Length: 428
Image (cartoon, rainbow, N blue to C red; front, side):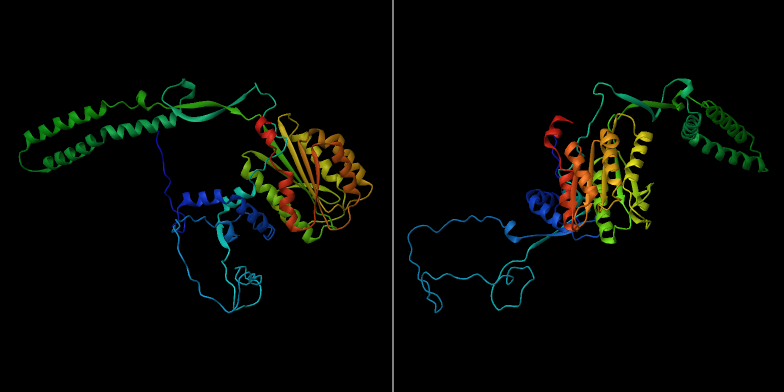
């Protein structure tokens, strides 16, 4: 058995192994710091590293030492401030604690908090630790595996129909150059020497005959190298690979109506950026469908979803109906795991909210693994929330969550996509 020791250094000359050991050891403190830090980030700054602070008391090491032992007498000097039994008060808060708060003081001491920088990859790993798509089914047909044929390079034998003529000729040219290169070089030298002797006015008949015989032998030797050999033949190789029977698509539905002010839209975008990073980092093949809606819904690309300025009135059912149409058109295969996340301020045309409930119960949720509704508002809940609460009470795969401030986004996100340990162990 071979053992490999990673002694690579990071950018500051410190051991990468020690760095990873530190992260594992203080993972809980670092995760708490990451959770606190995410609320201070901008919408476009979620995919970079982070500097986090860990209280010094959390990283203090135990100290073991040997006592002097035996009996000894110690004389301590007296003082003019305290007598036996007096209680010594702590220094005022913020003085000597290293937090940078409070007024200046001529007393008190302490230690600064430990500041630790983590990279983008480490930050995202901690951010999405223990998260997963709920109810993800790995396969609808456990014993049926589908395969697709794909090009897998070239091989030296095969059927004539798979012969690659161009690659075979390239191999032939390379072989002939390698086998006759030295002979051709010598042939050119002999021909130049022969031409020089023939131009010479002296009698060089014997030398000319010798050169001609040597040239003839070289030409026959070069001619014996075949134009193409069996070693040159290259055939296209085809192989089969299993086609994943588990496919997932996430629908992102965002309200961009006039009632959504810029602060509310920024919080919705922050949630969807978290969702996008989580999906792309945790899963290899998850499609994302972006839908913006006001009175009308429209499927858009990623850039338009986050940066378009279009707005209008509010009819939430337009987004649900468009999602249903897209599912029927592109994702009706039973192997698709369909997910949806909807963000809104809850403001909707009153007559449309009951229709949204019916659309969810009768059309959307029966084909959806998991549907998360996030209402971003500080106001009192309106008709859409009440209708959605009824849906949540009737469907296990529908969840409503409320976000009031930026600091609520990440905790709510973790609640929505927390890994189900029972499902994870059962393979569901």
